[in-house]
Length: 354
Image 1 (cartoon, helix red, strand yellow):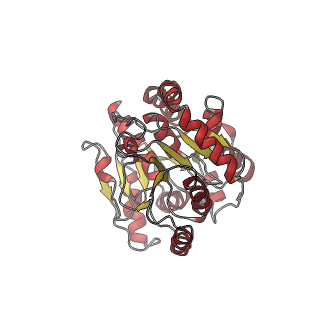
Image 2 (image 1 turned 90 degrees about the horizontal axis):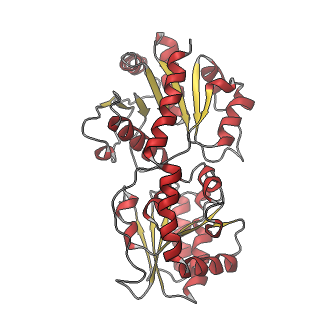
């Protein structure tokens, strides 16, 4: 069973959906437990995957904890996504003596800047739990900060399930270069730099920009809107909060940029790769480490606007060459078969360990 609080739009939620769908294709008995009622992406799970809604209203209601543990007791492995959800299920297992094997799947993206241990996490993780990190720094955190044995920690890099979508030719339906930015709206995603970059870029290229994401920090969103007005980008920039399937819109664009200064993934770069959409991104996270040797042109090590502009121009000029290579690299690194083998190995290790 996979556990998460909601299936709202987000990276961890996307990973859960893809893992469950892959496991269902491989004939595993997989279910999903949602701790609250917000499930706007649940329709992307295969219909055969049961969804159980706990409907928790108060985090530490004893009856809800008991009910969560009772549900989990029907499964051999309970695979919990995100730290705060893990603490909830781990507490329920501890109080009511749960019989299942418990995994924390850690998606924390700022681990290189923030190694603090959440309240109670050390005790709950060391109380017979297992750990999966989406990046190597997360695995090292679990070993060095929490004190988990190496044998109980696993690296499982993110993947996405590739969809059959056709990428448009450059400027086929527009006289402007169409640029996509996918990031939820919070400070770490560095949209303010993106706005200043796009302002400079618009002075030398005809561009249209779409930003896709959910508002996480309202004050930041307000600051961003003011910056858009200040840089006179309103006429060429569209903001969308309603897209829960990035791959379905990738074919509308010629290039993507990703300016977040700290990520564990970033998952969206794999989605761009899967559809052959070239991008320029700041080098951060496990996905960047996996791809930089294949596509050094795609990654930046600074936030110098003119260097980004020059790199964007270079990538656009070589778009067709990159597009062909991206498809083969995706199949090489992120195939669902390889992912299934890796996660099955993790599960078999856990099941066979007393």
